[in-house]
Image (cartoon, rainbow, N blue to C red; front, side, top):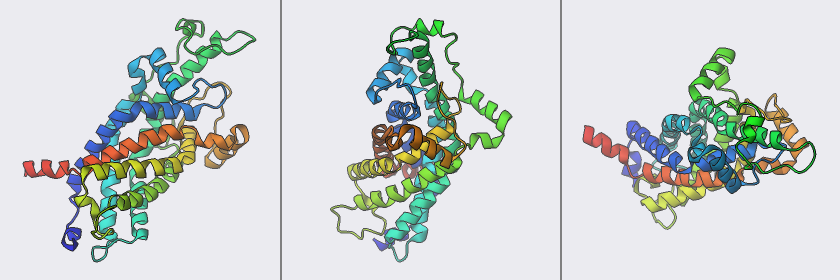
Length: 330
């Protein structure tokens, strides 16, 4: 086991593994992630009552592929994002190990390093994805407002597509490329990194919880040294279940930070919705207007996204696809 722990991490192989894992995971769970973003951004009028209601109304108003608004951005950038996150954690774990052993503080520190490294890709990816995901909610909100009578109950969102005509032009569909160019033109590179502090505040604690918890769950029932390098010999199913469990725990724990990040990165607000000057201002306004429960908006969706995402990621990652590809090439 000590010999295995001394083996150096093959960075190219880990990058391939992380990239493939991210692509598979995002494809499977993206519609739930879209529901999470829309639920977290609801401030006043409730367009959606929950995850299933959000998905059903999205399909009715925008078609099946409406659930994948912003998926292209995620699929493009999730490869480097997941590759950096998983590979960085492996590298930090190796550097912090001594005599084939890694104490708990080393596991937490390695997770912290991994979360910090990924922010360079995560921030612009989330920034673009959120604008595309939330456009449908804003259009739906306008439809509801336009078709509502002067007095009386709010009508159903899915009453009629013709209501959009009376509301004027529907909310414009913008591409990720157009949003990127607009941000670069009006705000420079800083525009793409709006909310970077909040992203860092979410991702670092997530990784500090996720990676140590995963590493320990991944050794349950095995007699080998729990702090050496258990992932190298973990069965697929064990890696998958450990990834799901650790991912859901970490996701729910940092949901309040994710709500803050999502609100800060949303450029277009609906009628009567707050804009925020920063993390502290956002926190105070949410508490004042919506109460503490608002910080858990989308928690169920987030757990349902992260659990299979990281379960798939860890399962594919430790199948060693990257090592096999490099072996065939060289």
